[in-house]
Amino acid sequence: MLALVPLIGYLAMFSWIRISGRSMVTSGGRDIAAIAIAVAGMLAVGPAELFFPSTAATVFGPIVWLALAAFYGLVVSLIALTSAPKLVVFGRTPEETYPPLLRAATRLDPSTIGDANQLQVHLPALGIHLRVDGQRGLDHARILAFEPVGSPRFWNALLGNLRHEMAQSPAPAPRRGFAMLTITTLLIAFLAWKGFGDRALVVEGFRDWLWR
Image 1 (cartoon, rainbow, N blue to C red):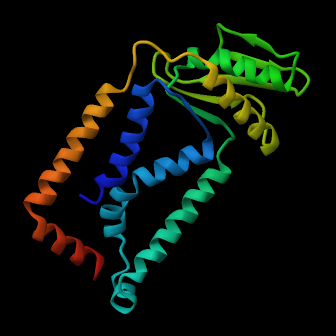
Image 2 (image 1 turned 135 degrees about the vertical axis):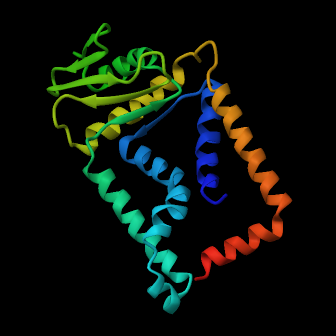
């Protein structure tokens, strides 16, 4: 049950974004952090159980979980910092992301040139080529640079401009996300059924899992 709580929160947030017709633009590092939080529960009852430091737990008790959480946070931070810079768009397909990206890039470089067929944007003054990556038809897209552009100033400026342009774009039709919402509702119902049906067993199991 513990493994499903962060995942349900992740699915609930993005199903609401998709159904409401809104969009969310974030950085690649924040996207990695969100995914890491979503799967944290499954890691806690999976690999963390397999490699749990039982000897340390007998000495320090539940405090050992803080050390494991800190280690997990450091690993996620390392992955986020060393991954290629990119922007991630939720709630819009790659085709729907391209026009706002072109307008956002034009605000940074008025001489920006776009290729709608390839979903690519060229900023000549900055010497940067951008592309919209993702499965066509799915409302999830990534914006990456062909060159190794590591300037946080550029990506932060593009992020702010793209958020502004996305807010001005019309909501897609038809709305998406109903399947994800259905799955989320079923998971919540399962948790409620198990939690209220075997409340004493759940509390005892959680206590045994936390205190070694």
